[in-house]
Image (cartoon, rainbow, N blue to C red; front, top):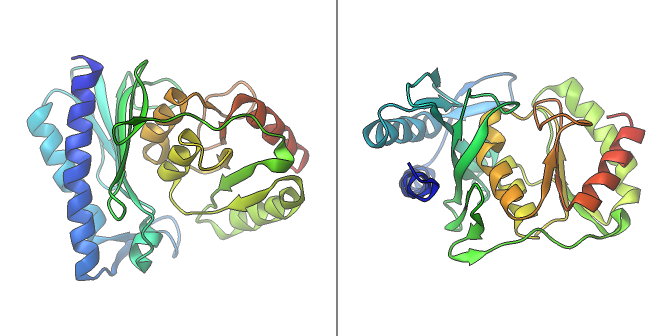
Length: 266
């Protein structure tokens, strides 16, 4: 299937799922469970939104695989897999902060970010109605407008986004690194939604973004969108982005940022 047709499916379902998540947010949200730690929460809306996405994808693409944050993986026979985060930024969502997203990507190959080839992706913020999209080789867009990564700047003039692990010990290490990095950059932003952080890089709203401990569904669509907007997205050294590290931004900024965080012990 052409990439544009896959993107149409991703966009349509992301918007439907986003509307469900937004509606449930207005009705009031409570923690349904915790996962990796007491602060890693999941709501009933996470489960309901993923169930809707999974059902719609099964109807549209019954032979494809599925890999979602809340319901796990299911292999398909087509060679394509849909990577889904039903509500990225669940803590923001829980607190009513209008910065959360539905993220849907379709990839070729095994559902492993170290080896897959992303073909199309959509990230929607239901609170603001902003829809970021990309197809492989087709560029990145916000709504109907093309977007591009910001121009190269010195690291000292770079606005850098990041995020923190749910594990308390890892957060402590990350906090210490940020304390060392603050004097080397324009400023730091911690907005709480990885997919939207990558879209912020893609649209020039920040100069770079880095984070550890990301799961595949956190970045599958966002990485494609950032790359199609001209960003470099990489892991540590020559590695692909993974739980170990993801760094994104203009290639010049990424090189300086990676050097700085390596010196600071990351």
